[in-house]
Length: 145
Image 1 (spheres, rainbow, N blue to C red):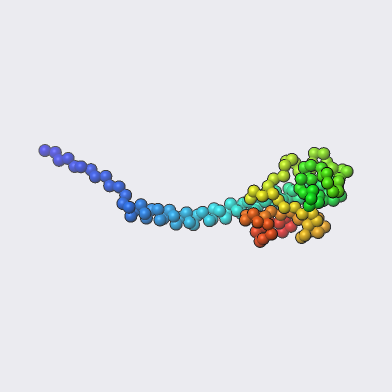
Image 2: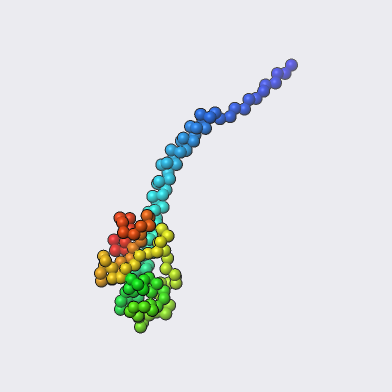
């Protein structure tokens, strides 16, 4: 006579599942801030690269026109000829910024432009409000630093 052995499938206990979830939570608590910091550092670098391109366009505008766009004219003067304030007789009809639309900073806000600048009274200040998106605090990304 054959004896049939009944196989018993054993699942995970509640304690084992809780242990695995605890380990995963600890790993996530360590990894998420590190990934976020790297992402923020990348956006800061991207801001600097974008500002460098805008600065080059502003310098080309100044060479042709003899002045930087005023704060009121803003960065839009790089893609559309200024119609208010001082006008430029030698304005390049193709504009000074190659993309025809100025980008926002990588944090989703427009770059801040002031001319004459506070930090650079003979030219302009160009900066991003940074990761916290609040202008005027320590995380602002400034083109002159």
